[in-house]
View 1 (tube, rainbow, N blue to C red):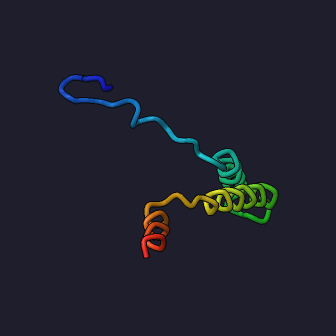
View 2 (cartoon, one colour):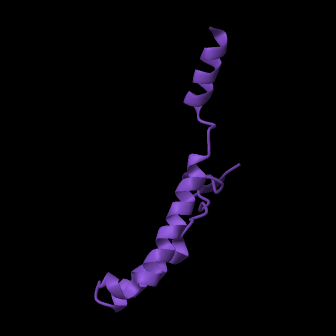
Length: 80
């Protein structure tokens, strides 16, 4: 359900912040860059941590096969 604030209807469930993967690694890398005048050669460790985290997240997202198009194509094959 929602709340009414002033004249506006506000649903707090829709405004929840989703989990942000790799946020710590990205902040660490950006702070390292700002400390070293945007010289990424001095931030290799932070850069590698961020890259491995992003690679892991993309591998997780590729495993999902529950999209609507996937199911429609699967059902279409069974109907023929």
